[in-house]
Length: 288
Image (cartoon, rainbow, N blue to C red; front, side, top):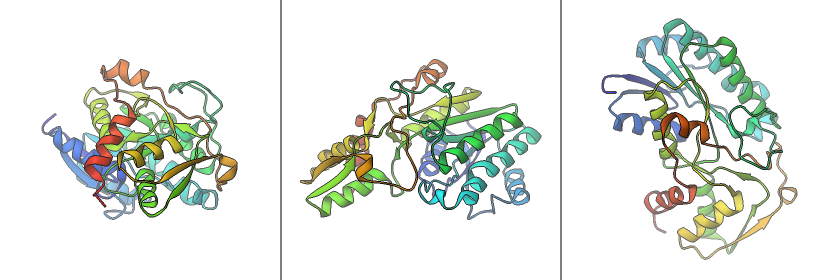
């Protein structure tokens, strides 16, 4: 893939974007990380100028409004980044011919299944955040640029930015006990693994909607407990129910993502989340 150019929106400071930038550079791409610090990405004219100047073969959109609870009070801001931005990128992709790789979320589902969600399963978001992300997907599918990849993923942790795992470890280092929800089940995903898998999708020119996450499933409590154990911290992780930890936005109770379509397209089976978590804790979390 040497010589191909990737524009990574969110590539300078985003949790996923930074991992994407590193993965693409490692695969020999010419990478141009950019984001809201480089241009007003919600302004179609400014976004168009940014994209045209980059002359990309592929644009990876890792910019999103991800404050799930805050979105309940800021639906316009959520929709600006999660629906209007991808729609603008879709129109540019249709005009200029680059591949667009857009990221979405497990929160487009209602959580009523008991088996992992496939990309074709019916959606039913429970929150403003989930609805705004689904609206972004729908806008892109309606515009239908000829080279489009939508990647749904979930529960991201990784280097470079604060995330759930780092937060739990910080709390566990200071407290004798932390209380973590155990009745929400999802797919913990390590951003370097996700980035490598998504680069593969771009390289094979995969079109359509894919789910990409580390294998296996966990509750937030199980994820926190494993991280605390790996870090060697003497803190009890106490399971609680969603009702005991009310939040502004409703979360799906079960949102595990199936990697079957991704595996069929690439031949790759993502490793279990617990193996990836071990790498993160041992390599990325500084010793106390």
